[in-house]
Image (cartoon, rainbow, N blue to C red; front, side):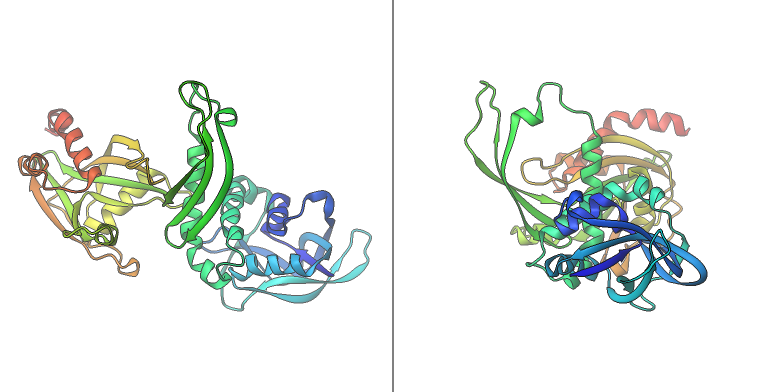
Length: 374
């Protein structure tokens, strides 16, 4: 049995219980402090770190009697963050000093930021972290902690997308608790993308339940798509890049002409992502975003949810672009007039559905945008 001190996100009981696979009543938990230490936010991350701080005191919980199986689960979860156990002495509420262990970050791994507060973190990131942890722990025994760590940014994007979907209004015509029954749920694959499968039944239009069917989905997250448009010059900007997905599918023209597009990071709005991607991929500054639509582009196979915009810009002022080298992006751009764009749509030259959608929307609203720019 092992006694552990938790100072950070695992003080959040739902998260601790999920990682351990144990309910709260089955845990021996005591509020304690660790002298000469403090807890700090990690710069550019949503989790904290502990560091020596003479004269300060770190608040936390002591969980006694953890089993080897519990420790293995924690090692998997914390191992992905490159933390390791260290022996320390904590102070109980009555002043008694007891020995325990705590996960410390590898020296130099993270940069400390401002002092970290549990309640603030729960309000801002608790639900996201809990959802992400569900995916992480589902792969224990199949994917190493080190390999899982590389997928953390993508896992958080998927968690944020799931929370966003849960926040959208329910369909008044259907009661999901009654009309969909999940018999089995398998997380089949994790990397930059993920694949999940379910055996489920759904209510048919005659009121009966369907047979149990197996269905899979490719999970990506949420994305913003923006077609830069200069109403004064009546021109748009497109980008071209190699798309492995279309190549793998057998496409003989896997270099695709598209609008600017990119995944939405946790905490980022679709509008912020659209502006960021326009700058990174095309080197343009968007002055105003016009909403085209927000929808699932391939609801039979993919869980990706996209926000499509037309971005008003000045295409005579392009600075940079070409994508982010660290993300293996290699793009070229082309400016073309509106008539040329629509000729490409009519000739079925474009294979990217968001581009066709944005172009057709622009054809309906072009005169309004041009009149406003004069």
